[in-house]
Length: 135
Image 1 (cartoon, rainbow, N blue to C red):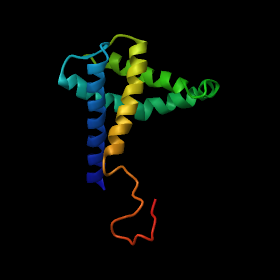
Image 2 (cartoon, helix red, strand yellow):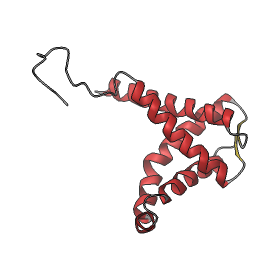
Image 3 (tube, helix red, strand yellow):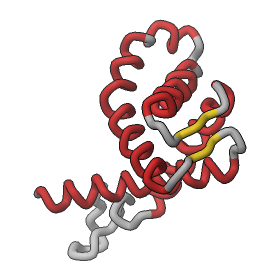
Image 4 (cartoon, rainbow, N blue to C red):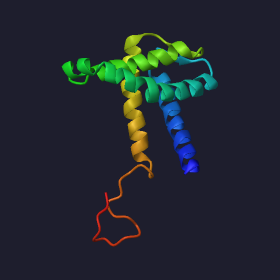
């Protein structure tokens, strides 16, 4: 349904915005000139992660295998650096700031989504008997 899709989009955009904002408070190398640059950066980062990141992951798959998956962290940092170059009010001091911020943003975003009631896995649904396990 279209309303659920819009709700999910706004929810994920809000989580990304919150994660970027907290990262800018914790990492001195990340700065946003205004609230609108933060919101636009979150929107563009979501787009980049949905479109460009999968292509890069496919192209760098051999390198990711050789490094036991650690190269994915480099790809994530490059996505943040790309967004910082594209958005005028988003300042990033360098690669290592983007590297550690991308780890922080991924973990924080995962934790926030995990705590949401709509994202969990219900082992016993409310409308069925306790003998039924639904995953």
